[in-house]
Image (cartoon, rainbow, N blue to C red; front, side, top):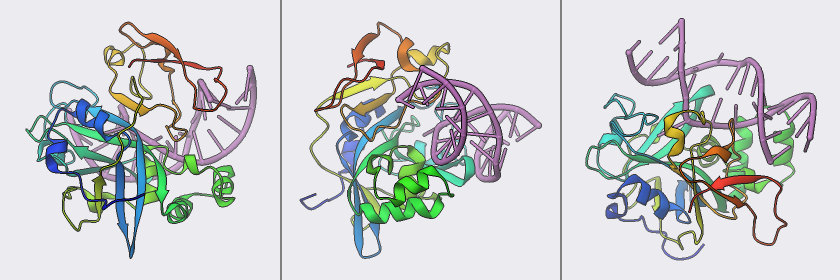
Length: 247
DNA sequence: CTCACGATCAGCT
DNA sequence: GCTGATCGTGAGG
């Protein structure tokens, strides 16, 4: 981690959500925590296409109190709550009231890993996952999921609506080398028979161990014109499983 | 690694 | 009421 960690300019986010998603891979998420900073490298995102265009976007049917931020200016935090009091963080995109946003799904800890671990542990019940994190291993699991990422960085709905370009704000995105290799996949956890399964809205940085595991149905039947690509991490043996990926 | 299951919550129709 | 932009467990490969 080097450089000034200044917020990316609003113009970065005033583009189509798919472009913003791609550009965000490899960039830094920075959280002010007390005296210090927590910094993580973004490795998995999902674009949400917005009003009338993306059936699984909260904004698909128009503005509601919950998704209001998606219709506002770009580069604002849309934090919504999901099961069990968990939260997910999005960044509003486009800024032209199309209702677009990008969900931050996974990241790698770069600075303040122990504080992130402590924040995760504070919410974890006794069990094998708690034991893993207590033993200091599994750092790739710390931020590997949208709600895990929020828990580790202390992001909750108190941050909903904040401007992520504010100079001394609690949360922002900073420049870094963009991810070199990117793969697009369908969204996690939706039905392969649904029409929207053909769309690849999810982007991951290839080779990162912190990418959240596929849940629910497998991506192997993605359309259109899927290409089967063996997934491998640098320096590791190829894994047995194959996933359908589109460049 | 994968899958199936269920906890128990806000938002919406 | 019903439905998830989820996560952790536990069993199986």
